[in-house]
Amino acid sequence: MIRGRYSLVLALPKGRNFEDGYAALQKAGLELPKVQGERTMIHGREGGIAILELRNADVPLYVDLGIADAGVVGKDVLLESGRDVYEPVDLRTGVCRLSLIRHPESTGPIRRIATKYPNFTTRVMRERGWVADVLELSGNVELAAVTGLADAVVDVVQTGASIRAAGLEEVEVLAYSSARLIVNRQALKLKSELLRPLIAKLREQV
Image (cartoon, rainbow, N blue to C red; front, side, top):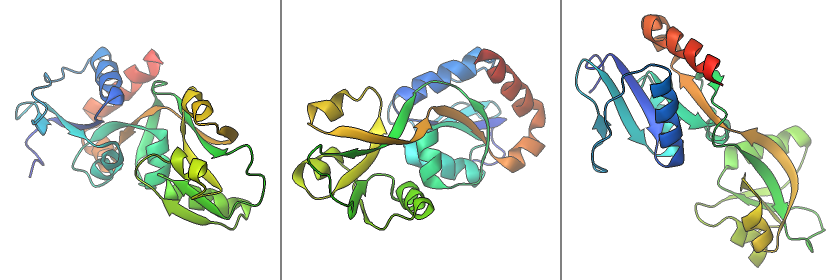
């Protein structure tokens, strides 16, 4: 249990968003702990600020349930998680989009969609009245469209280079994404003296 042992607990995702999020928080004036070895799960000393280095998809869960007071995560992950967290700042890094992708020769009805974002995709389908099976994949989603496993895929697109290299085309942008600061709603009340100035400084930076 880490509740009460640190002045502030932050959840950051592994990878590039960790570096961008760490830099943004540091620039906003937080005295962040140095990141130690890869096997270290909690960075920081008791009484100070702690950082939890997590998988992308786990960040909203840790913040929503109050294990972390705040965190940084992509909007695409938030859309998939459906977690009830306060999202006060768009950090404008890690910009990408969630798109519907097909093989150019696949012009028939879409009956199966493969994706790493099944909740988001199902919600979009319901809103638009589409009827299709959603296949959840954890690996190379584009391969599903190339091999015919699915009639289309929903996946993250940054430059579009990998899609073009696979012989696929981006049919429609379903949502735009970038890194967001997220805050636990209860922590915003209990630690307002730390979190509200942080939110204000981050807003000034973007």
